Length: 317
Image (tube, helix red, strand yellow):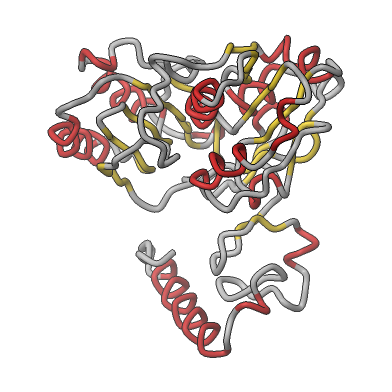
């Protein structure tokens, strides 16, 4: 089980098209995953690719960005490994490099739910193509659940979706177990950003006894790529985990900025608030920060600005 794939024509430089962004995940038994870390990091570094890739004994997950050729080289390296021979990926564009560095990390799970014995390779919900999604979630016999976290759902959702208001994916199982009315309708439709959380979320739901469980194939990103704004039931923007912050229909970059104090996505209007200070605070975290916190953040922001002036990236940025 993997994400989805869109092939772009190779291009040796970024040009006017900007940087290529490749999102990928693949569930596969990977008992010797730690041995893959160093060679993968070296390939990414050699070709100027940045982002984050997670390796665990259940597979790989992550998003990377670089030139078309650089991304092609990294994907070729991965697909040369037998567990990833049929790895798929999803592509979009960014006008500027959306990551500061490249990290290949070893993890217990490639998407952390914290529930043992949940294996999407053994049991998973029914995939629904973006073209068929509207009909499913418009069915009065369907409950629609957004499996993302509160800072993601804050800037966009499907019409009528239930928002669990979780702070992390680890909270999702308890939310399901405490939500008795999920059994009131026969069908459950679930969605997330790119599809990976729903692999585990639907597997968990089936383990909990829910039978008719569905999820959006390719996630919100695939829906926004394939479904026109005129036909869309999506409202708002989709949060993404890089410096673009959000994307809209057609996977165009959104207008949101990230508060680097609390990591909350902000609209242009919210950045004009007197409580917003770049790298220091925003309307969502200002009341939770002490003056000592803000002084520390201001110093960090000062160092980031100095590093950028010298043409370098500050590690705290």
